[in-house]
Length: 194
Image (tube, rainbow, N blue to C red; front, side, top):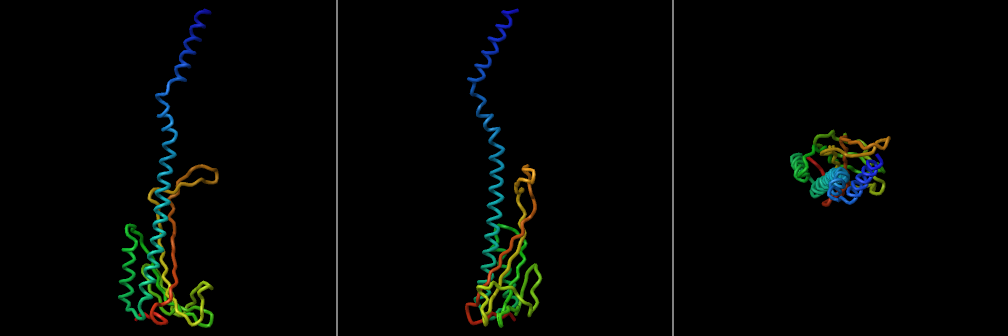
């Protein structure tokens, strides 16, 4: 019986020694531990970079619209509609529904009033309504063209986040994005739409 116990102990120690020296499965175990983390990081990087790119496109659209409007003293309604149609081309390759509002604002007596407002997929401002202007550009006797663009960005997969219990969860909630730019007319003192 003593020999049997010694033999079992000897075989066990030999197996443990062989197991410690065996390196064939180490890479597979390391990969199994690291792969889920790397895949999660990859998808997170794709989601964040896409959201940043869409946000930059929204900025570019508002800048382009405002720039095109301020290059003329007088525009027709069809000119403004054509300029707003150009926004879809600026947004390429992203296919988002844009809410565009282009507004002419006259600053007089310390308050900014809407002179005209044209929109696409949004409600226009009422003529004569007050418009909030940042104090740094609120200068009496001036005219501003305001280009505001809004959209909603839905994630391709899902945003990852930690919930209140520090558990990893996935969020598919859409993000509202908005950009507003204020420009002065390039030619003359105001821009009108007939």
